[in-house]
Amino acid sequence: MKLLRRLFGGGDPLPPVPLVLYTRPDCPLCDEMKAELRRAPSASRLELTEVDVESDPELERRHGRSIPVLEIAGRVAFKGRLTAEDFERKLARLS
Image (cartoon, rainbow, N blue to C red; front, side, top):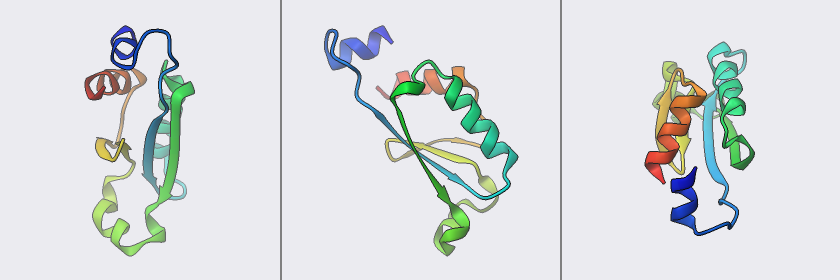
């Protein structure tokens, strides 16, 4: 987090992190990923948008069996599983 503060300036609040989670109904792995995101130290800054892949044939084709898929700032960062620690490391690398 110190690195993020340096990148974004002194004591200024850190900007929100836009996330998109591609999911589908009754997806245990999706629920697990959401729980891990809530555990992450940066959870208060996350702006999570959930997208049901079954709502769009193109999304269904693209992500199909790979769900959950998590995008950070428009880039695929995780598929299937993640831990809060993995998420924080990835977030730090992307910042």
